[in-house]
Image (cartoon, rainbow, N blue to C red; front, side, top):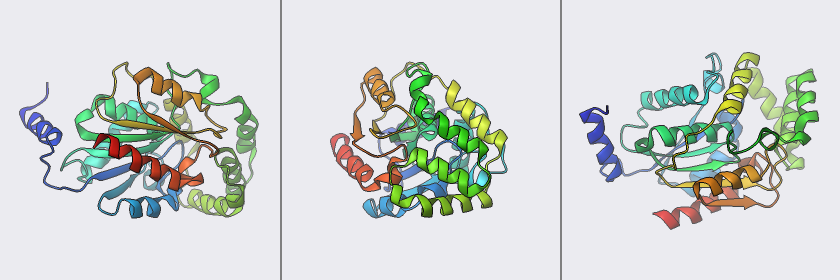
Length: 273
């Protein structure tokens, strides 16, 4: 049963009575990735929305939370993320906007379904959901050889380079990006146990049938070699949600063409505000 104080706050949020007029964005990354992996997208996004607050959140077991144990279910990860957002006072003044990719998109979806009054809208990138998308679409067979190379890589640099080759189509950036990402892993390494738990969480998450109450935009990449683009399309069809497809980018859509992502968000927000 929702408490009276919580119900009052929920009504205030939904009626737009929050004290702070600024919108707040929370950004969530995917499997074994952290806030630093957003790279140059962060300043681009902030420049596009200068009057809105932008915050990045690391999942348990990654980034600043790399020493924590990652839960093995999406819902448990969601609750830890919500707890951190609450401790940082990002939920005090009204609902927030979510921008999330891959596993982060599943967490955002779980958040939308279970705590809708906390969310104003969400943009979800290259997500897939068990029960909607079969396993062979959620992890394309073409990426199996690359996965084997990841397991046998003998250095941070080589492992990150193989990841980049899998998730990005901007070949001119591979070498420099591998240097940056290998440094991230050296500073804040993701343990094998945490990576396994995140993978299990993503593989097993099955959302409820209920339609999200707040506006949702789905973005995907035609050149995604990790997740079939049709996963996003199936989700859009199931819940009657708008989606936009980039013609050539890889799984890391914000990395490959951050300007396109920002343009889609700017166009979409005009349709529901």
